[in-house]
Each structure stands twice: as C-alpha cells, then as structure tokens.
Amino acid sequence: MIRHHPDDALLLALASATLARGPAVVVIAHAERCPRCRERLRQLDVVGGALLEAAEPVLLAPDALTRTLARLEDVETASKTASAASPTAAQARFRASLPEGMAWPRCLGDSVPDGWRWLGPGMRWSRLTLRAAPEANVFLLRIAAGKSLPAHTHAGIELTQVLHGVFDDGRKRLDAGDFDETDGSIRHQPVVQPGGECICLASVEGRVVFEGAVARALGALVGM
Ligand SMILES: [Zn+2]
Image 1 (cartoon, rainbow, N blue to C red):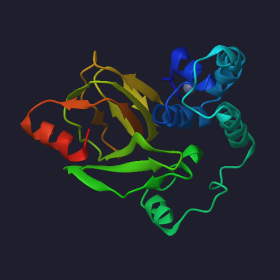
Image 2: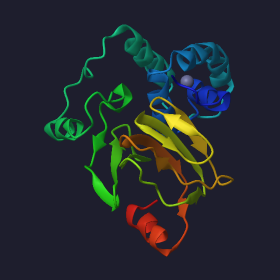
Image 3: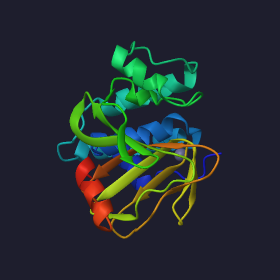
C-alpha cells in the first residue's frame, strides 16, 4: 500500500507544466502506480490549466501536460506489458538486470541507463539520460539488503520514488510505490531493510552533501 505521496505543490507544478523534467519524471513515475495522485492531478489540471494561461514561459513544452495525462490514462487502460516503443539492446540488457517482478516506469521508456556502477559495498547506481532533457540529473540507486547510504544532506531538492524493496531513513519507512522529498533541512541515512535489495529512482536539483571524507569522495565520484 502506498503511504507517501508528492505534496500538492509538486503535483500542481507538474499539472501546470512548471516542474523541470528531472523532478517531473520522478513524480510521474509515482503517479503511474498511484490512483490517488492520478485523481489529484486531474483535479489540479483545471487549476494548472488556468495558471498556465497566465504563467511565465514554462520549462516544459506547452502540450507537455496533455501528453503527461495521456500517458497516465494509458497506464490505467493498458495492461502491464512493456512500453510500446521497443527498447534498444542496451536498454533490454539493463532491464534484464532488474529484479524479477519489478515494474519499469513507463515514463522512463525512452531514457538511456548507462549501466550499474559501483558506489560502495552493496551499492550501485546508474545515471539515466532522458532523451527530452539530457541535462536532467536523474539516476537509479540500487542498494543491497541491510546496507545503507552514507549520511547526507542536500543543497537542493531530492525527489525519490521507491521502485522496488523497502528502506528506512530514520524519519520514515518507504515501501515500493512510496515517494519522498527531502531538502537542505533534512539529514538522513537511508538503510535498506533486510530481506531484499532496494531500487529507487531519484532526481537531484543542486548537490547532495555527504558527510565524512570517504563519503565526500564518493559524492565527488558520482558527481552528486
Ligand atoms: Zn500518490
């Protein structure tokens, strides 16, 4: 059961097409598997549409919301088969490396993962290049059962959608399907629960600030 959702500010930013592509893709990945947030987006669409007419130039293309909602409608009606676009060989190999039964977000269908890289014992990560926004800082984290990320804070906003497994960062427990938003006011150390690995989709606007020399070196290594 999904217990943690994007707040209205994020959903409204998505609905009014003012959310940058990186954060947007994480929120959409959540909405794909959350009926409650899809319903909320429909409600906010009315507000967002009105805002859009009065808004400053937006980050997304004017028809981005239409396409977003169409894609979400599609998720509701379509069976859970693979995305319509056939994946490249590299994408297919990458998806084959994912745990059995893990649903790959449809909104990531045309993204290009660059493969799993070592981040620390039991920890791997992969950058995801969004075709529509290659500059977006979006990545996957894959952490083995019982392992934890180094403690860190953020110089910006970090959005996380749990795709598989469970982790607990001392503030709350996040299951597959749950969404989390953290900023500079939050120092946390996500710990993956025993029993299975955890895979998260994340976007970071600004830097992740790791604590301690080794952790800082890791941060520099992955450019976070
Ligand atoms: Zn939700």
